[in-house]
Amino acid sequence: MSAFTDIRLEGVSYAFGTHTVLNRIDLSIKAGSIVALLGPSGCGKSTLLRLLAGLSEPKEGHVWFGERLVAKSGWMLPPEARDIGMVFQDYALWPHMSVAQNVAFPLKMRNVPGGERAQRVRQALERVGLAEFASRKPSGLSGGQQQRVALARAIVAEPGILLFDEPLSNLDSALRKSLCHEMAHLLRALGTTAVYVTHDRQEAQWLADRIVHLDGGEIASVRTVTSSSGEIA
Ligand code: ADP
Image 1 (cartoon, rainbow, N blue to C red):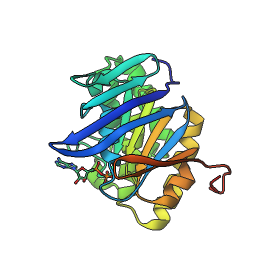
Image 2: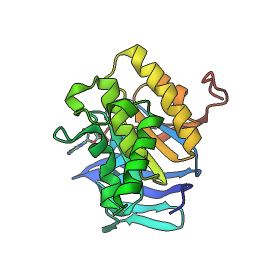
Image 3: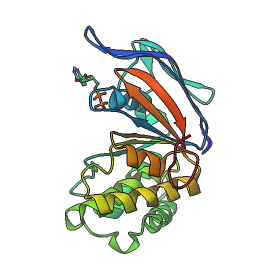
Protein backbone atom coordinates (compact mmCIF):
# COMPACT_ATOMS: atom_id res chain seq x y z
CA MET A 1 0.00 0.00 0.00
CA SER A 2 1.22 3.52 -0.71
CA ALA A 3 2.10 5.95 2.05
CA PHE A 4 -1.03 7.89 1.10
CA THR A 5 -4.17 6.12 2.17
CA ASP A 6 -7.60 7.63 2.66
CA ILE A 7 -10.09 6.20 5.11
CA ARG A 8 -13.83 5.91 4.65
CA LEU A 9 -16.44 4.78 7.14
CA GLU A 10 -19.91 4.20 5.77
CA GLY A 11 -22.81 3.68 8.17
CA VAL A 12 -20.59 2.07 10.81
CA SER A 13 -22.29 0.92 14.02
CA TYR A 14 -20.95 -0.95 17.00
CA ALA A 15 -22.62 -2.28 20.15
CA PHE A 16 -21.61 -4.01 23.35
CA GLY A 17 -24.57 -6.35 23.76
CA THR A 18 -27.64 -4.14 23.55
CA HIS A 19 -25.64 -0.96 24.30
CA THR A 20 -25.08 0.91 21.02
CA VAL A 21 -21.72 2.65 21.24
CA LEU A 22 -21.36 3.92 17.66
CA ASN A 23 -24.43 4.81 15.65
CA ARG A 24 -24.16 4.84 11.85
CA ILE A 25 -20.93 6.78 11.55
CA ASP A 26 -20.14 8.25 8.12
CA LEU A 27 -16.68 9.76 7.89
CA SER A 28 -14.10 10.38 5.16
CA ILE A 29 -10.50 11.10 6.03
CA LYS A 30 -8.30 12.42 3.25
CA ALA A 31 -4.98 10.70 2.57
CA GLY A 32 -2.17 12.45 4.39
CA SER A 33 -4.42 14.39 6.76
CA ILE A 34 -4.40 14.32 10.54
CA VAL A 35 -7.80 13.89 12.16
CA ALA A 36 -8.43 14.15 15.89
CA LEU A 37 -11.35 12.24 17.40
CA LEU A 38 -12.36 14.41 20.32
CA GLY A 39 -15.02 13.89 22.94
CA PRO A 40 -15.71 13.11 26.59
CA SER A 41 -14.91 9.79 28.17
CA GLY A 42 -17.29 7.06 27.04
CA CYS A 43 -18.38 8.74 23.78
CA GLY A 44 -16.96 5.96 21.59
CA LYS A 45 -13.55 7.32 20.49
CA SER A 46 -11.51 4.23 21.39
CA THR A 47 -14.17 1.95 19.95
CA LEU A 48 -13.92 3.79 16.63
CA LEU A 49 -10.13 3.55 16.69
CA ARG A 50 -10.34 -0.19 17.46
CA LEU A 51 -12.56 -0.64 14.41
CA LEU A 52 -9.92 1.10 12.29
CA ALA A 53 -7.17 -1.03 13.84
CA GLY A 54 -8.96 -4.32 13.19
CA LEU A 55 -9.33 -5.07 16.90
CA SER A 56 -13.14 -4.96 16.75
CA GLU A 57 -15.64 -5.82 14.05
CA PRO A 58 -18.46 -3.45 13.06
CA LYS A 59 -22.02 -4.53 13.66
CA GLU A 60 -23.15 -2.63 10.57
CA GLY A 61 -21.47 -0.66 7.81
CA HIS A 62 -18.21 -0.73 5.91
CA VAL A 63 -14.66 0.48 6.54
CA TRP A 64 -12.43 1.24 3.55
CA PHE A 65 -8.70 2.01 3.40
CA GLY A 66 -8.31 3.49 -0.06
CA GLU A 67 -9.96 1.06 -2.47
CA ARG A 68 -9.60 -1.80 -0.03
CA LEU A 69 -12.53 -2.94 2.10
CA VAL A 70 -11.06 -3.77 5.52
CA ALA A 71 -14.21 -4.46 7.57
CA LYS A 72 -17.92 -5.07 7.38
CA SER A 73 -20.46 -6.87 9.52
CA GLY A 74 -19.24 -10.44 10.02
CA TRP A 75 -15.81 -9.95 8.48
CA MET A 76 -12.64 -7.97 9.07
CA LEU A 77 -9.08 -7.88 7.91
CA PRO A 78 -6.76 -8.57 10.90
CA PRO A 79 -4.54 -5.74 12.21
CA GLU A 80 -1.31 -7.20 10.80
CA ALA A 81 -2.77 -7.13 7.26
CA ARG A 82 -3.86 -3.47 7.43
CA ASP A 83 -0.59 -1.57 6.97
CA ILE A 84 -1.10 0.48 10.14
CA GLY A 85 1.06 1.68 13.00
CA MET A 86 -0.37 2.25 16.48
CA VAL A 87 0.65 4.27 19.52
CA PHE A 88 -1.10 3.60 22.84
CA GLN A 89 -1.43 5.57 26.06
CA ASP A 90 0.67 3.06 28.04
CA TYR A 91 3.46 2.84 25.38
CA ALA A 92 3.09 -0.98 25.16
CA LEU A 93 6.83 -1.56 24.76
CA TRP A 94 8.33 -5.01 25.35
CA PRO A 95 10.36 -4.66 28.56
CA HIS A 96 12.79 -7.49 27.79
CA MET A 97 13.80 -5.98 24.43
CA SER A 98 16.17 -3.07 23.86
CA VAL A 99 14.91 0.14 22.27
CA ALA A 100 16.34 -0.94 18.90
CA GLN A 101 14.74 -4.40 19.16
CA ASN A 102 11.37 -2.85 20.00
CA VAL A 103 11.57 -0.56 16.98
CA ALA A 104 12.81 -3.37 14.71
CA PHE A 105 9.85 -5.62 15.50
CA PRO A 106 7.44 -4.46 12.74
CA LEU A 107 10.24 -4.86 10.19
CA LYS A 108 10.97 -8.39 11.42
CA MET A 109 7.28 -9.22 11.03
CA ARG A 110 7.53 -7.99 7.43
CA ASN A 111 10.72 -10.05 6.82
CA VAL A 112 12.87 -7.01 6.11
CA PRO A 113 16.49 -8.28 5.91
CA GLY A 114 18.91 -7.53 8.78
CA GLY A 115 21.08 -4.85 7.14
CA GLU A 116 18.17 -2.80 5.89
CA ARG A 117 16.39 -3.34 9.19
CA ALA A 118 19.26 -1.86 11.19
CA GLN A 119 19.43 1.13 8.89
CA ARG A 120 15.70 1.83 9.09
CA VAL A 121 15.68 1.44 12.87
CA ARG A 122 18.52 3.95 13.12
CA GLN A 123 16.64 6.37 10.87
CA ALA A 124 13.39 6.05 12.87
CA LEU A 125 15.24 6.59 16.16
CA GLU A 126 16.96 9.66 14.68
CA ARG A 127 13.58 11.04 13.65
CA VAL A 128 12.36 10.90 17.25
CA GLY A 129 15.67 12.10 18.70
CA LEU A 130 16.65 8.85 20.40
CA ALA A 131 19.55 7.57 18.26
CA GLU A 132 21.88 7.31 21.25
CA PHE A 133 19.45 5.22 23.29
CA ALA A 134 19.25 2.25 20.91
CA SER A 135 20.75 -0.33 23.27
CA ARG A 136 18.87 0.74 26.43
CA LYS A 137 15.93 -1.15 27.87
CA PRO A 138 12.62 0.78 28.09
CA SER A 139 12.85 0.74 31.90
CA GLY A 140 15.93 2.99 31.62
CA LEU A 141 13.94 5.72 29.87
CA SER A 142 11.53 8.46 30.99
CA GLY A 143 7.84 8.30 30.06
CA GLY A 144 8.32 10.82 27.26
CA GLN A 145 11.27 8.88 25.87
CA GLN A 146 9.31 5.62 26.02
CA GLN A 147 6.52 7.23 24.03
CA ARG A 148 9.08 8.36 21.44
CA VAL A 149 10.23 4.74 21.15
CA ALA A 150 6.62 3.69 20.59
CA LEU A 151 6.33 6.40 17.94
CA ALA A 152 9.53 5.19 16.21
CA ARG A 153 8.14 1.64 16.25
CA ALA A 154 4.86 2.86 14.73
CA ILE A 155 6.55 4.72 11.84
CA VAL A 156 9.50 2.44 11.10
CA ALA A 157 7.66 0.31 8.54
CA GLU A 158 6.22 3.46 6.91
CA PRO A 159 2.60 2.36 7.24
CA GLY A 160 -0.15 4.07 5.25
CA ILE A 161 -2.11 4.89 8.41
CA LEU A 162 -1.09 5.79 11.95
CA LEU A 163 -3.53 5.39 14.84
CA PHE A 164 -3.04 7.09 18.22
CA ASP A 165 -5.01 6.29 21.37
CA GLU A 166 -4.51 9.11 23.93
CA PRO A 167 -0.72 8.81 23.55
CA LEU A 168 0.18 11.80 25.73
CA SER A 169 -2.24 11.31 28.62
CA ASN A 170 0.42 9.91 30.95
CA LEU A 171 2.80 12.84 30.51
CA ASP A 172 3.01 16.15 32.35
CA SER A 173 1.59 19.21 30.62
CA ALA A 174 4.88 20.82 29.45
CA LEU A 175 6.09 17.58 27.94
CA ARG A 176 2.67 16.91 26.46
CA LYS A 177 2.75 20.20 24.59
CA SER A 178 6.29 19.85 23.23
CA LEU A 179 5.84 16.21 22.19
CA CYS A 180 2.48 17.02 20.59
CA HIS A 181 4.06 19.76 18.44
CA GLU A 182 6.93 17.44 17.57
CA MET A 183 4.51 14.72 16.53
CA ALA A 184 2.55 17.18 14.38
CA HIS A 185 5.78 18.17 12.63
CA LEU A 186 6.83 14.54 12.14
CA LEU A 187 3.42 13.44 10.82
CA ARG A 188 3.37 16.28 8.30
CA ALA A 189 6.90 15.43 7.17
CA LEU A 190 5.92 11.78 6.72
CA GLY A 191 2.62 12.56 4.98
CA THR A 192 0.96 9.59 6.70
CA THR A 193 -2.79 9.61 7.29
CA ALA A 194 -3.29 9.80 11.05
CA VAL A 195 -6.24 9.36 13.40
CA TYR A 196 -5.65 10.67 16.90
CA VAL A 197 -7.97 9.95 19.81
CA THR A 198 -7.97 12.44 22.64
CA HIS A 199 -10.29 13.98 25.22
CA ASP A 200 -8.04 17.06 25.29
CA ARG A 201 -9.22 19.90 23.05
CA GLN A 202 -5.83 21.62 23.11
CA GLU A 203 -4.00 18.55 21.92
CA ALA A 204 -6.50 18.16 19.09
CA GLN A 205 -5.93 21.77 18.07
CA TRP A 206 -2.15 21.58 18.24
CA LEU A 207 -2.03 18.45 16.12
CA ALA A 208 -4.92 18.01 13.76
CA ASP A 209 -6.06 19.37 10.39
CA ARG A 210 -9.61 18.41 11.26
CA ILE A 211 -11.34 17.75 14.55
CA VAL A 212 -14.20 15.27 14.62
CA HIS A 213 -16.25 15.76 17.76
CA LEU A 214 -17.98 12.58 18.93
CA ASP A 215 -20.88 12.66 21.33
CA GLY A 216 -22.89 9.65 22.46
CA GLY A 217 -21.61 7.50 19.61
CA GLU A 218 -22.48 10.04 16.89
CA ILE A 219 -20.53 12.73 15.07
CA ALA A 220 -21.59 16.02 16.62
CA SER A 221 -19.37 18.23 14.42
CA VAL A 222 -16.42 18.22 12.07
CA ARG A 223 -14.23 21.31 12.10
CA THR A 224 -11.19 22.34 10.13
CA VAL A 225 -8.23 23.75 12.04
CA THR A 226 -7.36 26.79 9.96
CA SER A 227 -4.06 28.04 11.29
CA SER A 228 -0.93 26.78 12.99
CA SER A 229 -2.03 28.62 16.13
CA GLY A 230 -4.85 26.12 16.32
CA GLU A 231 -7.82 28.35 15.65
CA ILE A 232 -10.89 26.54 14.49
CA ALA A 233 -13.12 27.67 11.62
P1 ADP B 1 -14.03 6.64 24.87
O1 ADP B 1 -12.80 6.13 24.18
O2 ADP B 1 -14.65 7.79 24.16
O3 ADP B 1 -13.79 6.95 26.32
P2 ADP B 1 -15.05 3.96 24.54
O4 ADP B 1 -15.07 3.75 23.07
O5 ADP B 1 -13.94 3.35 25.34
O6 ADP B 1 -15.15 5.52 24.84
O7 ADP B 1 -16.41 3.42 25.17
C1 ADP B 1 -17.67 3.73 24.62
C2 ADP B 1 -18.75 3.09 25.46
O8 ADP B 1 -18.61 1.70 25.41
C3 ADP B 1 -18.72 3.47 26.92
O9 ADP B 1 -20.06 3.63 27.34
C4 ADP B 1 -18.10 2.28 27.60
O10 ADP B 1 -18.59 2.14 28.89
C5 ADP B 1 -18.56 1.14 26.71
N1 ADP B 1 -17.58 0.03 26.70
C6 ADP B 1 -16.28 0.12 26.37
N2 ADP B 1 -15.68 -1.08 26.44
C7 ADP B 1 -16.62 -1.96 26.85
C8 ADP B 1 -16.67 -3.38 27.10
N3 ADP B 1 -15.56 -4.12 26.95
N4 ADP B 1 -17.84 -3.92 27.47
C9 ADP B 1 -18.96 -3.17 27.60
N5 ADP B 1 -19.02 -1.84 27.38
C10 ADP B 1 -17.88 -1.24 27.00
